[in-house]
Image (cartoon, rainbow, N blue to C red; front, side, top):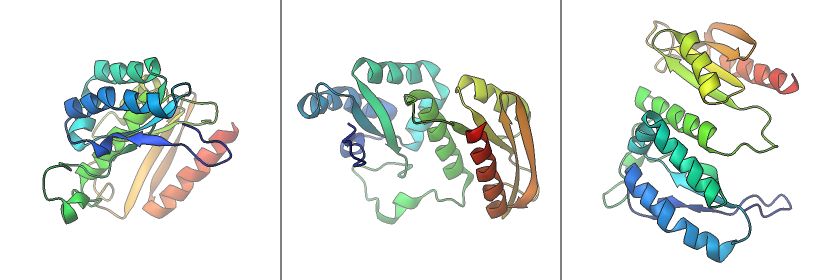
Amino acid sequence: MDLGGSLGHLTYSTLVHPGDTWEEMWHSLTTYVPAVKERVCPDRPFGVSLRLSGKSAERLTADAKERARLKAFLADNDMYLYTVNAFPHGQFKGVRVKEQVYEPDWRTDQRALYTMQVADILAEVAAQTQSLKLVVGFAAETHDVEKYARGKLVDKRLDLVIANQVGISGGGFESDNNAATAFWQDGEQVFPATSKRELAEQLLALIARRLQA
């Protein structure tokens, strides 16, 4: 629910409910969130913060019909996906978590893949508002980088895709350097291998230019 006056949005997080699989999260979403909305803002759109574990992200990534079902449920119930909680990758309820909540960390491909899967889900399911002027996605591929990146550009209805090839020497998740290629509907730009900091600055500059295009 947009509180207005630059106060932000009041949302409800499904993280408060037990469960880590997508089936358990779907039960929480469809059972409890409509009841909360009815009490808090029955006549206004209601924001949802959705808990997505690694298993849930894998399930939604592989199942287009399930993503469509999620999007339809939100629309039918006057809700919008405002954000997700994608920090705890594994089990979060009913077990000792503590320091394990950080695992897998950003030194691993597993964490990076999880984050990209969640970003793709958000890009497809979250309703695009007028304030969103540029929707950017990411693609990490082992081969046919341009083919899959341009496919994602269309399938996810993105404005820009930043793609790189994983598993190559001198770049990737476990290196301080990386290279990338940006694709948009009628163009592309290659970014040769450089430090990740420099690459990030170059990509931000490109995004700023595309916002003005």
